[in-house]
Length: 287
Image (cartoon, rainbow, N blue to C red):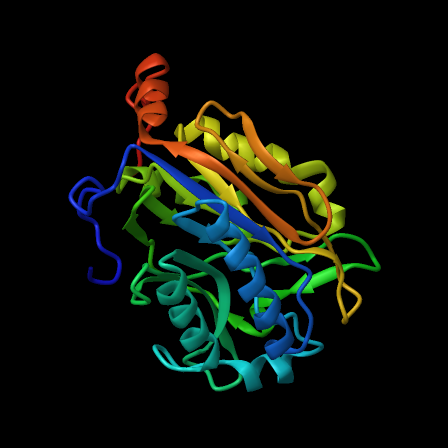
């Protein structure tokens, strides 16, 4: 399958019902240690019968500083993290969404935060670079300026998987509903939101935003998350979720490292869109 493929999921042999899993992590600054834990959890997801497993943002590195992030950044198509993901996918016969991997940017002092999708043969079939940068001042004591260190992406990405057509997004993207409208316009029945949500924003907004994206687009949302206090002092919210197209929380892991799984049924997407044809009823449409 070519990268970013947009053929019908039925054409690539998808069943109507597919088991998917999301992994919750508390990643640190040691890439090798993170990868060892990821390998164990990928095995657990395969044991649960998952055909597609999604990892959170920064799944292989929560760096102490930007110099460490730059040092770990890989060139497109080659590097220890990408090679690891490819090998694990082939070994387990499992589709893997590597939440984000640091990739070299156009600017020598910045990286791209890339969500990479590997098929069960270990081939990379899609890459999405996070578009929206988390530039916020949450309080006088807590602020973030992702754009200082990370280049935003430009391309919207949808790819076929055994579970259905998957629209890719990352963390802060979830606050921009226009992105998800474009993903469903390109046929997405599932959207991924790998994240490292802060505790400050996670408590009031995380579940609310995920369920809103599911309901307004009548899609499944798979949202693997980081959790806990990391080596740099950052605290992430956890609560990894799988949400159905009617807005129901199908699985949730509030705290701790682990795996949750649920069945994705493409028929449920079709039924939801038939029962509530809000997408077709829109009066204001872009472009």
